[in-house]
Length: 261
Image 1 (cartoon, helix red, strand yellow):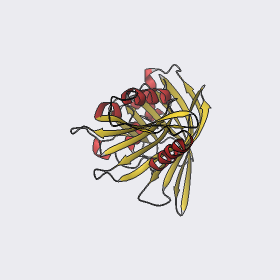
Image 2 (cartoon, rainbow, N blue to C red; image 1 turned 90 degrees about the vertical axis):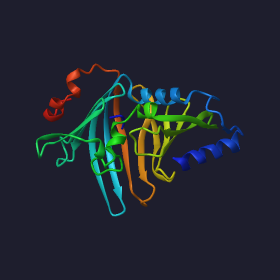
Image 3 (cartoon, rainbow, N blue to C red; image 1 turned 180 degrees about the vertical axis):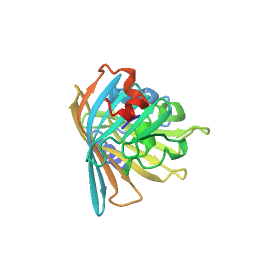
Protein backbone atom coordinates (compact mmCIF):
# COMPACT_ATOMS: atom_id res chain seq x y z
CA UNK A 1 0.00 0.00 0.00
CA UNK A 2 2.26 2.69 -1.14
CA UNK A 3 0.43 3.96 1.24
CA UNK A 4 -2.50 4.25 2.67
CA UNK A 5 -2.41 7.90 6.00
CA UNK A 6 -4.35 20.82 2.36
CA UNK A 7 -3.62 23.82 1.01
CA UNK A 8 -6.19 25.60 3.19
CA UNK A 9 -4.83 23.83 6.24
CA UNK A 10 -1.29 24.82 5.33
CA UNK A 11 -2.29 28.42 4.79
CA UNK A 12 -3.97 28.53 8.17
CA UNK A 13 -0.90 27.07 9.83
CA UNK A 14 1.36 29.49 8.01
CA UNK A 15 -0.84 32.44 8.97
CA UNK A 16 -0.80 31.35 12.61
CA UNK A 17 2.96 31.05 12.51
CA UNK A 18 3.32 34.48 10.95
CA UNK A 19 1.08 36.06 13.56
CA UNK A 20 2.65 34.29 16.54
CA UNK A 21 6.28 34.00 15.57
CA UNK A 22 6.78 36.09 12.47
CA UNK A 23 8.86 33.27 10.99
CA UNK A 24 7.50 32.33 7.58
CA UNK A 25 10.15 32.08 4.89
CA UNK A 26 9.27 31.84 1.20
CA UNK A 27 12.14 30.02 -0.48
CA UNK A 28 13.01 30.83 -4.03
CA UNK A 29 16.02 28.51 -4.12
CA UNK A 30 15.48 24.74 -3.92
CA UNK A 31 18.92 24.45 -2.30
CA UNK A 32 17.90 26.61 0.66
CA UNK A 33 16.85 24.74 3.77
CA UNK A 34 16.58 20.95 4.12
CA UNK A 35 16.67 18.68 1.08
CA UNK A 36 13.01 18.09 0.07
CA UNK A 37 13.86 14.58 -1.16
CA UNK A 38 15.21 13.68 2.26
CA UNK A 39 12.13 15.18 3.95
CA UNK A 40 9.73 13.14 1.77
CA UNK A 41 11.77 9.93 2.15
CA UNK A 42 11.85 10.34 5.93
CA UNK A 43 8.07 10.87 6.06
CA UNK A 44 7.42 7.76 3.94
CA UNK A 45 9.74 5.57 6.00
CA UNK A 46 8.31 6.90 9.26
CA UNK A 47 4.77 5.89 8.27
CA UNK A 48 5.76 2.39 7.11
CA UNK A 49 8.89 1.33 8.96
CA UNK A 50 10.82 -1.64 7.56
CA UNK A 51 7.54 -3.55 7.76
CA UNK A 52 4.17 -2.76 9.28
CA UNK A 53 0.78 -4.18 10.24
CA UNK A 54 -2.16 -1.84 10.77
CA UNK A 55 -5.85 -2.14 11.61
CA UNK A 56 -8.10 0.57 10.17
CA UNK A 57 -11.66 1.82 9.94
CA UNK A 58 -12.83 3.52 6.76
CA UNK A 59 -15.78 5.87 6.31
CA UNK A 60 -16.97 6.81 2.81
CA UNK A 61 -19.21 9.89 3.11
CA UNK A 62 -21.61 11.28 0.55
CA UNK A 63 -24.30 13.96 0.98
CA UNK A 64 -27.06 11.36 1.28
CA UNK A 65 -25.34 8.21 2.57
CA UNK A 66 -22.33 6.79 4.44
CA UNK A 67 -20.57 3.43 4.34
CA UNK A 68 -18.26 2.05 7.02
CA UNK A 69 -15.68 -0.69 6.63
CA UNK A 70 -12.90 -2.38 8.60
CA UNK A 71 -9.55 -3.29 7.09
CA UNK A 72 -6.14 -4.70 7.89
CA UNK A 73 -2.92 -4.11 5.97
CA UNK A 74 0.67 -5.35 5.85
CA UNK A 75 3.54 -3.43 4.22
CA UNK A 76 7.20 -4.14 3.51
CA UNK A 77 9.61 -1.41 2.50
CA UNK A 78 8.34 1.17 0.04
CA UNK A 79 7.05 -1.28 -2.56
CA UNK A 80 5.01 -4.14 -1.09
CA UNK A 81 1.56 -4.00 0.53
CA UNK A 82 -1.48 -6.19 1.13
CA UNK A 83 -4.80 -4.60 2.17
CA UNK A 84 -7.78 -6.78 3.15
CA UNK A 85 -11.36 -5.90 4.14
CA UNK A 86 -12.65 -7.65 7.26
CA UNK A 87 -16.09 -6.00 7.55
CA UNK A 88 -18.92 -5.62 6.67
CA UNK A 89 -19.66 -9.22 5.77
CA UNK A 90 -20.46 -8.42 2.13
CA UNK A 91 -16.96 -6.97 1.65
CA UNK A 92 -14.95 -9.27 3.91
CA UNK A 93 -12.12 -10.92 2.02
CA UNK A 94 -11.89 -8.33 -0.74
CA UNK A 95 -8.20 -7.53 -1.00
CA UNK A 96 -5.57 -5.64 -2.95
CA UNK A 97 -1.93 -6.62 -3.34
CA UNK A 98 0.94 -4.40 -4.42
CA UNK A 99 4.17 -6.22 -5.30
CA UNK A 100 6.77 -3.77 -6.56
CA UNK A 101 5.26 -2.30 -9.75
CA UNK A 102 2.40 -4.81 -10.08
CA UNK A 103 -1.05 -4.65 -8.46
CA UNK A 104 -3.74 -7.31 -8.13
CA UNK A 105 -7.23 -7.41 -6.66
CA UNK A 106 -9.19 -10.36 -5.31
CA UNK A 107 -12.96 -10.71 -4.79
CA UNK A 108 -14.20 -13.84 -2.97
CA UNK A 109 -17.57 -13.75 -4.77
CA UNK A 110 -15.79 -14.23 -8.09
CA UNK A 111 -12.89 -16.23 -6.61
CA UNK A 112 -10.61 -14.52 -9.10
CA UNK A 113 -7.30 -12.68 -8.89
CA UNK A 114 -7.14 -9.84 -11.41
CA UNK A 115 -4.05 -7.87 -12.28
CA UNK A 116 -4.81 -4.17 -12.71
CA UNK A 117 -3.48 -2.45 -15.85
CA UNK A 118 -1.87 0.95 -15.48
CA UNK A 119 -4.86 2.55 -17.24
CA UNK A 120 -7.09 1.70 -14.26
CA UNK A 121 -4.74 2.85 -11.51
CA UNK A 122 -6.40 6.26 -11.26
CA UNK A 123 -9.85 4.71 -10.72
CA UNK A 124 -11.61 4.76 -7.35
CA UNK A 125 -10.45 2.12 -4.90
CA UNK A 126 -13.33 0.24 -3.23
CA UNK A 127 -15.75 3.07 -4.05
CA UNK A 128 -13.78 5.54 -1.91
CA UNK A 129 -12.14 8.88 -2.68
CA UNK A 130 -8.77 7.14 -2.75
CA UNK A 131 -7.53 5.76 -6.07
CA UNK A 132 -5.48 2.63 -6.65
CA UNK A 133 -2.55 4.98 -7.22
CA UNK A 134 -3.07 6.53 -3.78
CA UNK A 135 -3.18 3.07 -2.28
CA UNK A 136 -0.08 1.80 -4.02
CA UNK A 137 2.39 4.62 -4.17
CA UNK A 138 5.14 5.61 -1.81
CA UNK A 139 8.38 6.45 -3.56
CA UNK A 140 6.80 7.57 -6.84
CA UNK A 141 7.25 11.11 -5.58
CA UNK A 142 10.98 10.47 -5.19
CA UNK A 143 11.36 8.76 -8.57
CA UNK A 144 9.09 10.69 -10.92
CA UNK A 145 8.89 14.25 -9.56
CA UNK A 146 11.07 17.32 -9.22
CA UNK A 147 10.75 18.51 -5.64
CA UNK A 148 11.03 22.08 -4.44
CA UNK A 149 11.02 23.29 -0.84
CA UNK A 150 8.71 26.27 -1.31
CA UNK A 151 8.18 27.51 2.23
CA UNK A 152 9.25 26.99 5.83
CA UNK A 153 7.01 28.16 8.66
CA UNK A 154 6.52 27.58 12.38
CA UNK A 155 3.33 26.56 14.19
CA UNK A 156 2.99 25.51 17.83
CA UNK A 157 6.76 25.49 18.15
CA UNK A 158 7.36 23.09 15.24
CA UNK A 159 8.78 23.83 11.82
CA UNK A 160 6.55 23.08 8.83
CA UNK A 161 7.80 22.41 5.32
CA UNK A 162 5.68 23.04 2.20
CA UNK A 163 7.04 21.00 -0.71
CA UNK A 164 5.92 21.36 -4.32
CA UNK A 165 6.28 18.32 -6.59
CA UNK A 166 6.24 18.67 -10.39
CA UNK A 167 6.36 15.49 -12.52
CA UNK A 168 9.15 14.91 -15.00
CA UNK A 169 8.05 15.12 -18.63
CA UNK A 170 8.11 11.33 -19.11
CA UNK A 171 6.70 10.44 -15.68
CA UNK A 172 3.91 7.80 -15.65
CA UNK A 173 1.65 9.92 -13.41
CA UNK A 174 -1.68 11.69 -13.86
CA UNK A 175 -1.16 14.82 -11.76
CA UNK A 176 0.21 18.13 -12.92
CA UNK A 177 1.49 18.94 -9.45
CA UNK A 178 1.36 17.77 -5.86
CA UNK A 179 1.90 19.81 -2.74
CA UNK A 180 2.89 18.33 0.63
CA UNK A 181 2.98 19.97 4.06
CA UNK A 182 5.26 18.08 6.47
CA UNK A 183 5.96 18.71 10.13
CA UNK A 184 9.56 18.56 11.29
CA UNK A 185 8.89 15.27 13.10
CA UNK A 186 8.06 13.61 9.73
CA UNK A 187 4.27 13.82 10.13
CA UNK A 188 2.35 14.47 6.90
CA UNK A 189 -0.19 17.22 7.60
CA UNK A 190 -1.62 17.73 4.11
CA UNK A 191 -1.26 16.62 0.51
CA UNK A 192 -3.00 18.41 -2.38
CA UNK A 193 -3.36 17.05 -5.92
CA UNK A 194 -3.53 19.39 -8.94
CA UNK A 195 -4.52 18.64 -12.53
CA UNK A 196 -2.55 19.72 -15.60
CA UNK A 197 -4.16 23.18 -15.42
CA UNK A 198 -2.95 23.59 -11.81
CA UNK A 199 -6.47 23.31 -10.39
CA UNK A 200 -6.61 21.55 -7.01
CA UNK A 201 -8.88 18.52 -7.38
CA UNK A 202 -8.49 16.61 -4.14
CA UNK A 203 -6.78 16.92 -0.80
CA UNK A 204 -5.57 14.56 1.91
CA UNK A 205 -5.53 16.10 5.40
CA UNK A 206 -4.44 14.75 8.77
CA UNK A 207 -7.24 15.28 11.27
CA UNK A 208 -5.71 13.61 14.32
CA UNK A 209 -2.23 12.56 15.44
CA UNK A 210 -1.60 9.83 18.01
CA UNK A 211 1.09 7.45 19.18
CA UNK A 212 0.60 4.07 17.51
CA UNK A 213 3.06 1.21 17.46
CA UNK A 214 5.51 3.23 19.53
CA UNK A 215 5.65 6.23 17.18
CA UNK A 216 3.70 9.43 16.64
CA UNK A 217 1.77 9.27 13.36
CA UNK A 218 -1.40 10.45 11.60
CA UNK A 219 -4.24 8.52 13.27
CA UNK A 220 -7.14 9.88 11.19
CA UNK A 221 -6.89 11.22 7.66
CA UNK A 222 -9.47 12.55 5.21
CA UNK A 223 -9.35 12.52 1.40
CA UNK A 224 -11.75 15.13 -0.02
CA UNK A 225 -12.95 15.81 -3.54
CA UNK A 226 -12.57 19.56 -3.98
CA UNK A 227 -14.92 19.75 -6.96
CA UNK A 228 -17.73 17.82 -5.23
CA UNK A 229 -19.15 19.24 -2.02
CA UNK A 230 -19.40 16.91 0.96
CA UNK A 231 -17.61 14.02 -0.78
CA UNK A 232 -14.83 12.56 1.33
CA UNK A 233 -13.32 9.37 2.74
CA UNK A 234 -11.80 9.09 6.21
CA UNK A 235 -9.39 6.39 7.36
CA UNK A 236 -8.73 5.94 11.07
CA UNK A 237 -5.74 3.89 12.21
CA UNK A 238 -6.78 1.87 15.25
CA UNK A 239 -3.65 -0.20 15.90
CA UNK A 240 -0.19 -0.51 14.39
CA UNK A 241 2.98 -2.58 14.67
CA UNK A 242 6.26 -1.74 13.00
CA UNK A 243 9.43 -3.62 12.06
CA UNK A 244 7.87 -7.05 12.63
CA UNK A 245 9.00 -10.21 10.87
CA UNK A 246 6.91 -10.86 7.74
CA UNK A 247 7.62 -13.85 5.47
CA UNK A 248 7.85 -13.37 1.71
CA UNK A 249 4.68 -15.44 1.35
CA UNK A 250 2.56 -12.55 2.70
CA UNK A 251 3.03 -10.57 -0.50
CA UNK A 252 2.00 -13.23 -3.02
CA UNK A 253 -1.09 -13.77 -5.16
CA UNK A 254 -1.59 -17.12 -3.40
CA UNK A 255 -1.88 -15.36 -0.05
CA UNK A 256 -4.07 -12.67 -1.61
CA UNK A 257 -6.56 -15.35 -2.65
CA UNK A 258 -6.23 -17.68 0.33
CA UNK A 259 -7.06 -14.97 2.87
CA UNK A 260 -3.90 -15.31 4.93
CA UNK A 261 -1.89 -12.58 6.58
